Image 1 (spheres, rainbow, N blue to C red):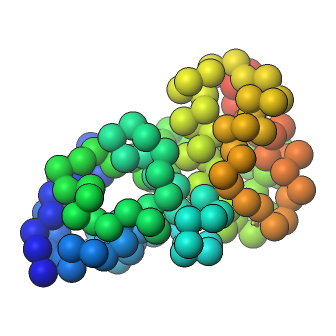
Image 2: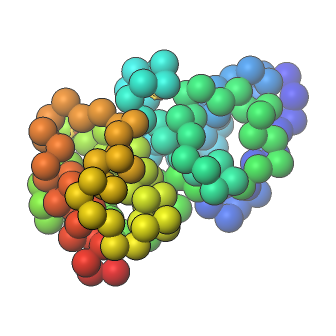
Length: 148
Ligand code: FES
Ligand code: FES
């Protein structure tokens, strides 16, 4: 076991964990932030996406030691504007993909505040959804960009 320091949504945490534990599990189980979801557990679906020092990553693929000393933003750390847009357009159904979609959409809107549809498709290309057929998700991101 090792002590790892993570600053999550602006709050510093020191956790005593197995160094190869997945960042996703440490966020959920040791720090108690269960908004980050596990979909595939293999880096394919984006449900577990968080920002690690400003970069969008799949937290199921990151050994926690790799994040030692880093700043992390999870879905709990974002303001509610994207969440609200997803609710309004029906972009969230079962909800498993939603936190990761919102993290990816947030990262996109930081880079491109007024994205075109192709930008949105590309920005969310690493995130899979089994429920919505994607159009309502794209509508949500468009709505959030308009209301920002
Ligand atoms: S759970 Fe991490 S990418 Fe699917
Ligand atoms: S809302 Fe169910 S997987 Fe996207």
